[in-house]
Image (cartoon, rainbow, N blue to C red; front, side, top):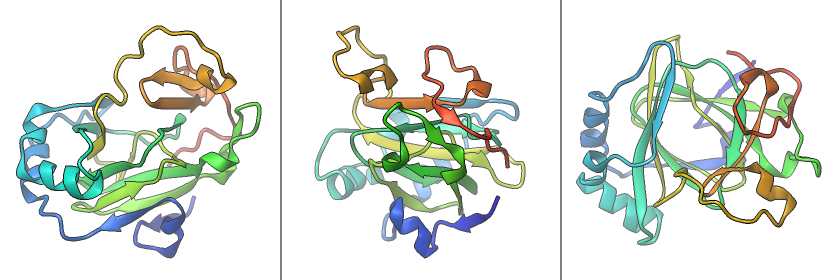
Length: 205
């Protein structure tokens, strides 16, 4: 699969890259976090990261003052497995080199199926501050050069936390697996409770 750079023109369909944020302390703190060699871990909110000065800069400049959470997704991964989306942009800070597998919500069919052949891959160098638009399908990053990755995940407060029981009124509701998280999985990933809507190859890098 062709791996493009997040700096390429093609990425503009999925998000944008930001300069001007001092993320040195954030990346330093991330270097101390666990990054398994045989799994992926995700924590929506980490108090130590949210106390750093850059967290206020991100809150005010990228979220317009909206309450946010800083967590992380770390580990080792080389497969697509699933695609998720939110009702808002997700911002990330690459605390290591990593690769994003991305798609477009507009390509989801009426039956909530999605063709994995439409996925594009982007290399993200360490230190990059980036946005993925609300319509950008994404999931856990993939490792670059086979090494564990570390990625800061920044979202509105409460996103990806446990979903409260409620009536499911609209067809899309069946994709909800957490608060503000709609997910379509590949059957090969065997994600419990997920809708297996990804058709085609479970892409592996």
